[in-house]
Length: 210
Image (cartoon, rainbow, N blue to C red; front, side):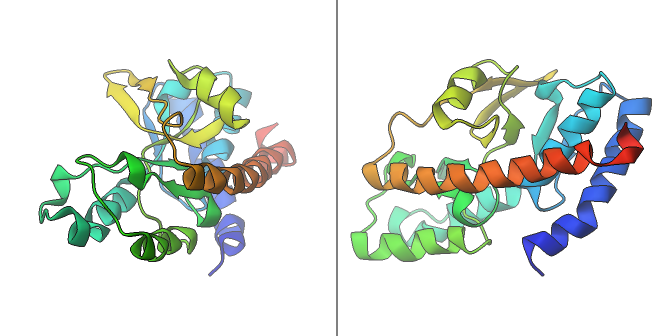
């Protein structure tokens, strides 16, 4: 099943569910896990905007599974069998070329041989994913505006500091990227723009939300 197939199935479901949230519990913390997340999170945001109850601090794309995958994939190089002791930031989105693992910023630092780096990155480009912190609407979140201006997109996955009211701060990890990571980011931004616009246009053309 392709991402387009998932969109055709899930876009309307997410729209209708979030319409119910907007009407009945607009202050809820909303975690979207339905794929394609790159489009369904913008769908959720547009529904909440039309209802006049959108709060970017309370809407997230769920990415926990990919975090676990990343922490597991690099165990051979980390010398650590406990994935919880390894942190690798991944930025961008949740499919294909939009997933950009920042191995250069792993904690603790990990030396991955160049010939091994390609196979680790390729799964992230093949829709399995590596790791991605919360995929959020950056404007309105502390630290988010700067990341949005730097990337040219409003929806982007970065490490997010959480608090009782939702997203408290978006961490900008882009300044320390390697040249290769920056190259991957360019392809990521192109892919994200199309996915985001697809979600926005779905709501704009949906009579049920007007």
